[in-house]
Each structure stands twice: as structure tokens, then as C-alpha cells.
Amino acid sequence: AVTAAVAIVVATVVVVVAGARRTASAPDRYTASVGGDVDAVVQQRSGAPLTDRIAALPGVKEIAAYTFVFGGLDNPRHTVPESLITFAGVRPLSSRLIAGRDANPNNPHEFVADRSFTKASGARVGDHFAFRSISRAQIASGQGFGGQPKGTAFEATMVGVVSSPDEINSDGTVAVFPKSLLHEDIGFVATVMQVR
Image (cartoon, rainbow, N blue to C red; front, side, top):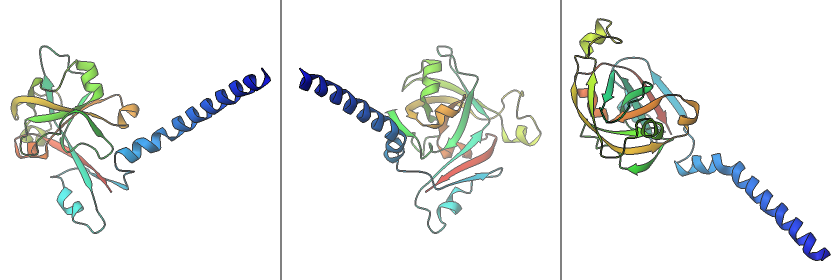
């Protein structure tokens, strides 16, 4: 009886310690699953993204750049969150694809969204949204917010869903279109580049 009681206590302690170790190592395991930590973040405040120039620097092994664009989505069947932030580029290095696929770099009308977008809107891979944007001329004349969209407009298709630790620290939802969207008449500003 004493041996059985000791065995139960020891087994309980071992299970609790193993669970605690697994929980404590979760952030490191997630970081490793997406290729490790990002070594640098380069922020460009304006102008066309300098991604190719940064990628050509010695020591740069991998880069993910995304540019904030003045565009939004609409769909009568889905409630698009007001907190939606739209980017053109590639998804962050710290993210991973959890459904569907990455957007085709040559098709500017495809996008991936984060889990918070799909939860808020009820959208699924394959759903279509109307995309409307503020033109470059509108941005140049100071009409970035509140103006009637006069830029590129098209039907966009959500082709993938991503997960990122950034979702924990942000109230925003994110949609990422390919960099080729920047070739269309759409206003854009800052670019963020994650570098390894």
C-alpha cells in the first residue's frame, strides 16, 4: 500500500513537471517551427519598397517585406472587421500557413488573411471579396482617409489562412496581397522588412 501511494505521488509529480517543461518550451518550439528568430526589422517610411536592395546585402539569407496599402475588402455575406489592415508583399517570416496556400506572386488579386480575420468575418479559403482602394493621386493630394475610393478595384480571392504570434499583441486583422499589387493604381506608404 505504501509503495502504491508513493508511486502515485511520484507519477503525479513527473506528469506535472513534464507538462510544465512542455509549456515553458512552447515559445521556443514555435519560433523554431517558423525558421527561428528574425535578426532585424527594417522600416521604410515612404517610397517604393527597397526589398531587392536589402535582399542583395551580404549576410541577408531571407527577407519578408510587406507594404501598407490604402485598400479594403467588402462582401455582403461576411462582416469585414473595421480593424482590417491591408498589405502588399509576402507574409511575415514569423507566420505559418495553416489553411490553403500562399498567394501567387503573379496574381495581385489573391490574398492570405490571418486567423483573426477569418474568425471575425466567417470567411473561408476560396471566398471572394470586392477590393476597393484609394489611388496614388488621392494620397498625393492628402485624401488618404475618408475619400471616395478612386484607385484599383477588383474581385479578390482569399487563398490561404496564416497564423502568427503577432496576432496575440494586436487588435488588428490582416490581409496580405502579393507585391505585384503595387504595380496597380493604389496608394501605399510604409514598408516593413523582416530579415534573417
